[in-house]
Length: 370
Length: 220
Ligand SMILES: [Zn+2]
Image (cartoon, rainbow over all chains, first blue to last red; front, side, top):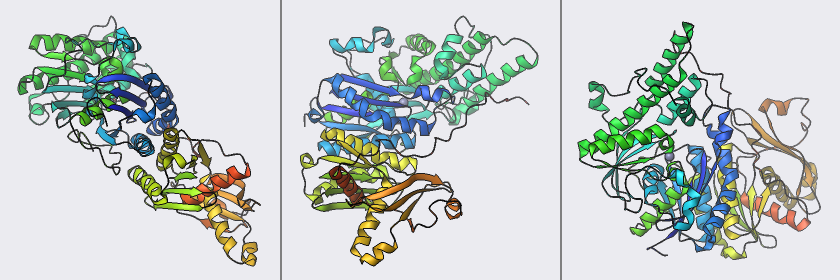
């Protein structure tokens, strides 16, 4: 096996994206994603059974497409990497079954890895000149650092999507990751979906709220910031809560409707979005200051939110924190980040996983490899 | 020679050969550990059969019917193993393997016994107080089970009702699907030139989701 620049295929099926990525060391060769999001739209959220069925149907076409795009053959691979968890159990199992079969068929080692740590690993990937266009210029993150500078440790990572909202302290990607805090109820992405419904907007809520917020006043309504009171900060300093915020928005809208007054949708959307983004960044920046770590990395699908990226740039700038945001196609769930983490494990000399691991829907972030 | 995988009940893997029969078979009855055991079972079956991957001519996959979560693990593994080998996937209805297994067994009994049970109703657990069933009239000249109805999904009581069209058939409730029999069905189907079933999982149920009725009121 080439342990200096291993050629790794990564399989990610923790939620509604079937992600197949191929990397050579830190070089991205393919980031193929098939999403079942449209199938979930009519239900107003991700339906686990619908997602799992879609993973099964997309698996072979996605692997075939990724291999073709990377210009390799399956036999060239040095290893297979796969998400073991956390995520939706039935969805994860499709990826685990597929990855094990591929590893045994090709007689290659397998690395079962943590989805959340994979989000951090995405930042290590570099795109050669040829491939840059496939990610799209406007898809690049707004990070202040040149993408060629390597990720420095330790770093704080804020991972925000429809499935998770976590704050991590990463001392070393392959050996030392600590969970500082996470949501105690809804994920931030879920809050966007739920508030979108309150405002009569379709799923997925993130881009809809972003659009509705245009021209709105983010200070028009002061919605609550979850777990930010002094007593909450004792036990939940870095934890998040969004269910109270969602209820507050719904109540505010209902009061307007009950009074027969029009609902100022742009103001509600902008004020809600500001509450989410504010609490996310307040806690992330606090973690950086408290722990003396002047580096913040963002990951997860909610990074697509413009206001989050803009406010992150402002706040980190003011606090002297270096901000890193991987290109957006590497922020949403994808197989390339799983392949990237697998490659890092190989380059660090870690042994492969045995074939006996399963899908672990609540895999702790400290378990970088299973 | 085929690798055969079925996860419609527990997890079962085999290597079979049309002439040599079942060369190796490994099964785990646990219906909750498909993802954990699938890789090891494949590896062990290949080792025990002492065959090279290149000598396999395809991969047989049990397409169900079966409870969703486990069923998908085997189909995903079979499809991707076939892709990895660059060999075709051969879909098989899992109930056919149960019927084949039974009919082959009857063959070894006296001809009189075999005549007593020419038909068969294969029944498996579909969970949620329902069962999957398939009806068979017997074996054809190639030794393959002849399915006359199903696979279908019913309440268990429906199979005992007068109106059920296959009430007279010998009923066989099965908790396992042997991958060796599944592989042999695939081998014989191919040899006989019969068509294979579609490469589609037999869920026989829609994903049970309720359409959103709009946001719920939070104020009293
Ligand atoms: Zn994610």
